[in-house]
Length: 119
Image 1 (cartoon, rainbow, N blue to C red):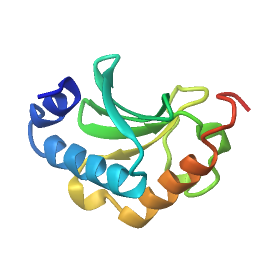
Image 2: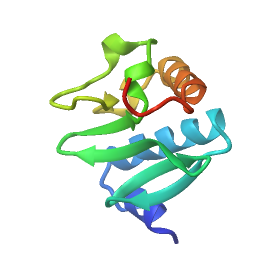
Image 3: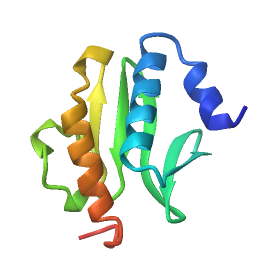
């Protein structure tokens, strides 16, 4: 089994379920992504470049976006928390995940994927 999948499957519940759900939505929404294991967490790469990542931390799971400076949809739901450029959607339970919000953000992140990291 690859390290990214191992990372996800080795997490305790409810984080495993959250991570598996996020992985599924990302891969269904952006089928061209490639799941890798970088910096000790699962990263989705697109066209050879980082697209988004999954990270379990403390009591939540983040799905973070690299080109977040260009994102305009659902920014009121995104967390920056001490980060200058990165933004993420944060979940503490599977029930908190709104697939419409997640897919909207993923689709916009896909549209801005060719922009520079900084605005």
